[in-house]
Amino acid sequence: MRFLSGIIAATLLASPALAQCGGGFNSFVKGLKAEAVQQGFDKSTVNSFFKGVQQDSAVLKADRAQGVFQIPFIDFSRRLISQNRIDRGKSMSRKYDAVFDRIEREYGVSRGVLLAFWAFETDYGAVQGDFNTRNALVTLAHDCRRPELFRPQVFAAIKLYSQGDFDPNRTTGAWAGEIGMVQMLPRDILENGVDGDGDGKVSLKTSAPDALMSGGKMLSHLGWRPGEPWLQEVTVPAQMDWSLSGPGKSRSVSEWQAMGVQARSGSLANLPASLILPQGRNGPAFLAYPNFDVYFEWNQSFVYVLTAAYFGTRLEGGQIYDAGSPPQGLSGAQMKQLQTKLQAGGYDVGKIDGILGAGTRAAVQAEQARLGLPADAWPTADLLNQL
Image (cartoon, rainbow, N blue to C red; front, side):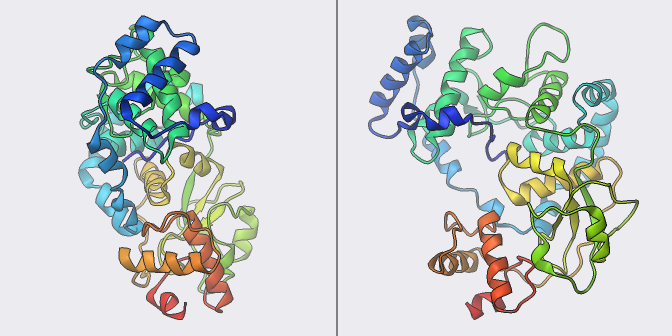
């Protein structure tokens, strides 16, 4: 399920060499070898790493087939969050209680957060992927969709190999090159790998303590604020300025309360927060605190991020959200039609993919406001017809 890690240094993005992609695959690999040697890797190590490398068409197919993210939040979350996953999460919490306590002490990351990622990424380590990691990374670096992300990962994998922590022929994982129980890219492992069980090695595929500690360190590295909440379910009034809702539109809790937003249970945290309405004003409602933004550094899909954040609260005893009664959303084909119309109207909605991502949500909200509709960013057939 992991979409992509967001750790990309600005200096790497700016380097013309890292943007190289396409052309003949063998020539591309030859270029990677030359650059690896220029970076200081031993030539024999480089040749050994790339020996037998192959382009993997299954990786490209998986990269272009992420239709699951077209599913709206209610359906998506119900698909991913089963009673079995909840029960196993609680069992894993007990089994690795000391590890989670250590993570909270050292990194300030609550156990529910990591348990949710562990569940969604690999079903608590059971399904880690069987793609050859080296081939996946080189294939995606050669492909011209995101070379700025994957080309550096190839060199990070060479570094792991030179340290004895990567086998080019046997290391396997997800189609996008992530490895281990919480699915980390090679560069993430170099920067955040932790020997959680004290055996002198970082083994993210076989050691839950290593994987969980590394995940906790990575979240801390990405900006997690220790001891703070990340998401809280709320109730909203029948009427308010819905255009104020959406990720990145942070206000103080007192301001939200003045508008009629209240905690569904417990008390709201005294932190800045954004009002998240994944399926509009009549569906579930959440306040997202600053830590919620860190989720987008781990994964860039809105529906995945919200589901993972919500599941983290459930694993710590939170209640099932109130689904409300949101109006029927658009089909994938209708969403593509909507995106095409919005793009023609001058909005940047990104790729026409049928996914209600951040750009499409912002455009929908702007058009709702222009047409005098409640600007809650939930597109309906009525909006499509009016456009």
